[in-house]
Each structure stands twice: as structure tokens, then as C-alpha cells.
Image (cartoon, rainbow, N blue to C red; front, side, top):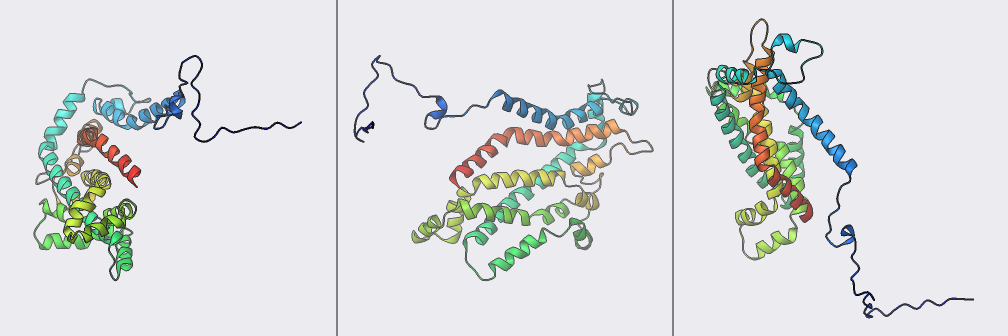
Length: 305
């Protein structure tokens, strides 16, 4: 005995339910519906968040204690009564007010210049056709393999010859270009910027600079935000080169100023931790203000790509 199954025609209208109610699909099955995480996912995220925040918490705890208490076993895991006193001493002894201004100036100029030049160079390597493009890109990548320590001696000789020691331009000029930034923007623009858009702009009579301003920069905005954030943090935390060409009493950056804290036969660990805590707070503030925009830009670029 065989059973014949008849399929309804494609243009058939489904009959409404007999009870007059519409059948609701689950939220996850709807078009554009959001998937909600389960309790295990929230537990894992909370655990990783606490682990990530523990070094900052421990720095604040150590800054509120003294050397004798920090040497105890087990060490303290809660705040003492000296936190604000240590922060005040660190601020005045290290001249952190001037150091914050200097570091903001250095990091801001370096980040903006790196983002601007890296975007233009990345566009050239990604979309323009010229002789030697592959070889030049290999040279740019090859400079990333050179350890920074090998650049210190010739760079210091140039700074000394220009009489730039203990001046901010000695820190700013060597950090205006980044090979990583060029490579990063090239890889992003290869996927995020279609060739058809550039060709359409060329057909409309746009010059190269107009294409860069009105086509490349809007398309590269998410990657520019990420690169700017990375370069700002890197420049803010840079220590070796500023320590060699700047002094704590002249034009120090934050890291140079903090390096002079707690010196003596017995270093004051709590004072050093207080300086480290103060030097970290501006970065947390910047990320708290612009973090949502940066993450949104990353997601926007991922959807467009």
C-alpha cells in the first residue's frame, strides 16, 4: 500500500489558525533576532573581568600600604589608610602634572600623524599599482623585525648633534611613522575598500587627494580609530627612548617621571605603586570615553567587509 503526498502550490495562501491566534516564532528564529547568552557565558565573562581587573586593584592596595606590610605573608588584599597620602606625594615628587601634559602632547601628535600617514601609505600599497610595490612592502615589514635597541645609538647620535636632548621633539619625531601602522591599514583596506568605488570616483574626475579624503578616509574610519588607540597607548607607555633623552627635572614624560619615584637604599614600593596607578588612570579614562565608539567602529567595519 502506497501513500501519496501532495504538496500545496507555491502561490497558495496558508489558512489562518482556527482559534484566530497567530503562531509566534521564537525570538532567535526571527529575522534579525538577537541571541541571548546563557548563565554559563555570564559567569565566564565575569570571571575573566575580575582576573583582568585584579592587577589594577592590587596596585591600588599596594599604594595604600607601607613596605613592612607589603613584605608580610600573606600580603594584604584590602586597602589601607595611606592611599591618598601616597598619591599626593607621588604627584608632587614626580612632577606628574607637567609629565601628563608632556605625554599627552607626545602621544597625541604621534598617534594622529601615524594614523594619517599610515592610512595614505596603506591605501597606496593596497590599491595603487606602481613598480617596486612588493619590494617596498617587504622593506616596510622588514623594519618591524629590527629590535628597537639597535636603533638607540645612531638615533641618540642624531639627537645629540641636533642639540635636542631633554626636549620633546627628540621623542616626537622618531615616532611619527609606524611600519606596523602601514601594514595594518594595508591589510584592512584590501578588504574594506572595493576597487569599483575608486574607479567610480576616478570616472567622476576626482583627483588622488580627493579620493583619499572622500573615499579612503570614510572607509578606513574603523581601522583608523583602532590604530589611533593602539598607538596612543604604546606611546604613553614608552619608556626606553624617553628615559635616554629626557630627564625628570627637565621635560619628563609620565614613565620617566615615575621611574624617579622611591629611589633610595630601600625603595618605597608603595610610592612607586602610587605613581604607577596615577600613570594608568588617564588610559582608563580615554578607553572609558572612546571605547564604545572604537568597538562600534570595529563591528561596523566587520559588517561592511
